[in-house]
Image 1 (cartoon, rainbow, N blue to C red):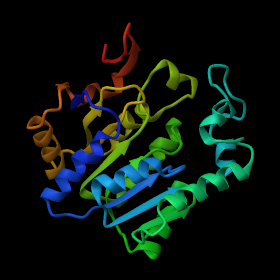
Image 2: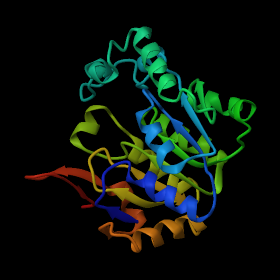
Image 3: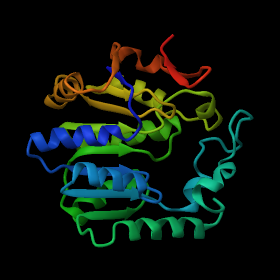
Length: 259
């Protein structure tokens, strides 16, 4: 597993290069879309055959964000982050605006399909709407609570191709992630034990981005080879260490530790 000294979002270009070398126009899905800013970066870097954007764009999903009926004292209420969403998380109009903004961002792109649904509920709608049966890339950026993140991984595992990859955003354990009870890192640790997916690379950043591929697959080897032959600086560690990863605050920047 390569800990890469690159910004989040850099994996899109790396995958785009690999798909072009394979002469593959990938099928790509994003779970958790919001304004579509991240999705547009994927679209431009990977030039997908289809891009399927799945989000509920619903205030109810924010109310149901946590599995706890009463938030524990160490978890910050989501309403504290209303500025990021551009309005109250209790108001459906906030999410209607985000949905409209995403629609406008992809206007005129017929190979982009937006599915307004919870991630697991969207599965039976994908093929009828797009003709896509399996994906080359699934980017997971929906509910980051442990059970929900694990459910997304296990559910979409069945619709990722043999040489497909998962990308996960906010896959870290840090002071800030603890405040939101983010459990994506722990979910990946469990997912690794249940499937043949292994972490291939991660970004040396806070709110870390992680790339998973099937053990022994062509894609796993291709990612390693491309990074090894690139100008990306990295440190290689055993993939089994991923669940121990945490972000630590240092004097000038945040660093990743496995201690």
